[in-house]
Length: 138
Image (cartoon, rainbow, N blue to C red; front, side, top):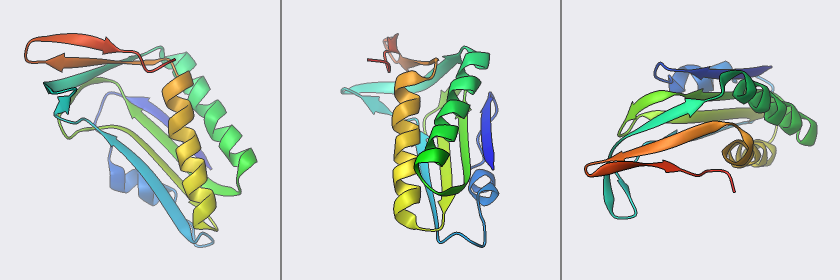
């Protein structure tokens, strides 16, 4: 089971993690990316994310399918939020279940690292004294 979502509403971490639960799995690993209140010594007020939605969903699905061929994953969810997200809000959540924890850890790390470099989602940091687009793609 692969669950890929890109939406404006808040991400419900418990729901996403519950969706990957499986009795045959001994490990569920999640990465929860939240909005922090400071970047390079500057106070952050919020983040804003924009996406090329159809391409982002396609790329996120490609990442998930790649992970399921590299590791014996039972279920995998990748949820990313767009729009304005306040401090402490969840921007991205990836949750993976597998029979063994090592596979779940490796697959989860692969998914977030690949997402940050390949998916057309752009982040703008809003500070007290201005804003800046953050280049996630090398």
